[in-house]
Length: 283
Ligand code: SF4
Image 1: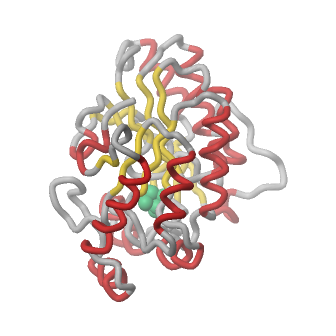
Image 2 (image 1 turned 30 degrees about the vertical axis):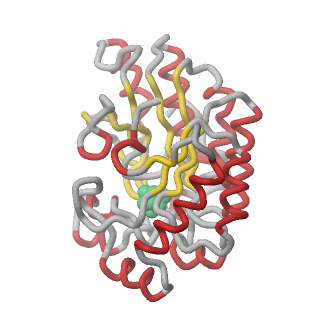
């Protein structure tokens, strides 16, 4: 890895392993099939969202069961990207989705600077992909200086509810909603194009106020989804227990559809609230 790990910090305490990956760019398919590659700097994810479909792609049954309790940093990721840029595997104009099965700004990224190293390697190689970054982590704001150097970029910030209680119930280890909104604002103020992913939309306390807050960010794109059972968009889907939890919370498809109507009304006719495949277009 190009950047150094700060002393006094332990990978073990952070619940993060290190491994060499064979590849870092994966040909994209499924809901991101319009991209050329997905790029996952980590495998696993410490944010532990109850609805996470990526759990299904963990390599073993044990890892699926303990999803949210582990993450592995692909320590040679920047070197692999440099090689891909040099040998023409990655070229300017290629659409990259970072990330499809993790959040590229894991808590450990603060110290490891692995994702930052990947971005630096791409820029140093003079390659300008069409980059979509998908995150809910305030650590991403650290890299705003690099995002500004990409000619085609959209940073999609996941804002799934207005309620911290709901967030704790469905995303127990993920960053607070207010922190995500502040992060999105940082990008907007720096001139970096953002998307707002209300995906999946979780129970919302005050849908009018939530819609106003999101609309005020002036994102380039707004996307919502309901928690997906396995199907054409998310082949893996959300665990039945989590779908049951949502139903118990009075949050089913009819409530989601009503909330979508409110958000769309507040956004106005020029800013469609996308859904399904439409919400995963490259930057
Ligand atoms: S942040 Fe994304 S990858 Fe991580 S647990 Fe949540 S939904 Fe899954």
